[in-house]
Length: 440
Image 1 (tube, rainbow, N blue to C red):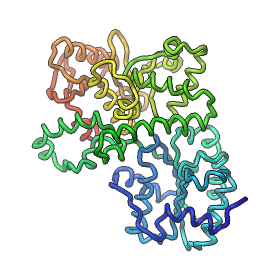
Image 2: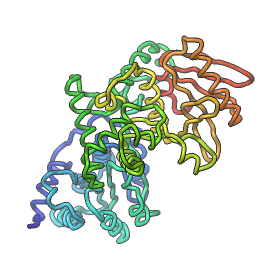
Image 3: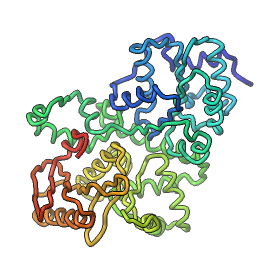
Image 4: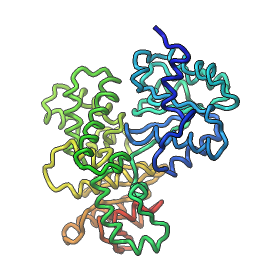
C-alpha cells in the first residue's frame, strides 16, 4: 500500500506554514544569523545536535523569517517531520521521492523552494536522494537534520563532500538562558549593575541546564519527567534503533556510569571492570554510540602524539547538567562538577578544540587553535580556601610554562581578581562573565 499525493500533503500540512501560523518560540539569533549566511550558498545544510536541543524549532524560525522578512511565498517552503507516526510504515528512500513529487504536483511552487527533512537518518540511503537533487541543480535549498553525529559519517561525507555545510545545535548557552529568563544585559554598565543577580542566575543555570522546553516549564516534577523521557529517547531512538542493539540495559548502564562519573577521568578498561563486562571492545563501541548521540563527550588528554592521546584516559562531560541530575545518583556535593561541566559546554558551543592537561598537576581545559595551545583554564567553585587556591594556581602555572603562555583563567561561581606571578597573569572570573564574553 502506498500513499496518494493528497494523503501525503494532508500528513505534511499540520507541520507547515502553508495555511497557518506555527508557533516558533523564542528566537535564537546566533543560529539564525548563521543559517541566513548559509542561505546564500548552494550547499546542502546539515543541522546536527542532541535530541530536543531545538533543531526543528530553529529551522521553523528560519522559514518564518524568510516568508515574513524576505518575501518568500509560504508555498515555497516544505518541512517534513520523518518521526511523524503516520509516515512510520513508509520510511524508505522511495518515501522521500514520493514526498518531493507530491509537493511539486499538488502545491505547484514557483521559483526557489526551501526544504527541510527533519531526522533524516531514519531513512537508509537518504544521502543518495539529497545528492540527486543537488546534482540535477534543481532550484531547491535543502536542509537535513539529525540527532547523531553519524549524519556526517563515512557514507555521508564521501557522497556529499564539497556539497554540504554543517551547523551544530546545542542546548542553550548562558546568554541564551538569560534571554529565555527575560533578563537582558545590553551594556557593560548593565552587567556591573546586575552583578549579584547574574551570579544568582548563573547558579540557577548550572541546575536548570539548557534544554529550551525545560527552561520554559515551571513544574519541577514535570521537568524531571521530561528530562527522563529525553534520556530514554536518546538511548532507544538514537542508539538502540540506529545500531540495532539487542541488550538495551547494557547501553543504558554504560550511559548511567558516565552520568555518575561526569568530570572524572575514566578508561574503557576501568569501566569494563566496574560493570563486570566481558569485552573492553564492547565498552569502547558503546561509548562511541553515546558520543555520536551527543549525550556524552569524552575529552582527551593533550599530547603531541595522536597515538598517546587515544591511549590515555578521557574526562567525561555530559550534554546538559539538568539531564545528568535527572538520571544519575548523587554521591557527593556536585556544585564543582556542575560548574566544570558547564564551562566545558560553554567552550564547546563556541566551537573550541578542547583537551585537558596532565603533567605533575592537572588543568581542566586547554584550548588548541591550529597547531598552538592558546589558553589554559581551570574551573573551581570557590577559592576561599588557601590550599585550593594554591592548587589551582600551581597547575595553571605549570601548564602555562609548558606551552609558553602568559595568561590563564580560573572560572569560579563568584570570585573576581587578577593574580600576577612570574610575569604570568591569571584572571579569576565568575562563570557569568565567561557566558557573556564573546572571547576570553
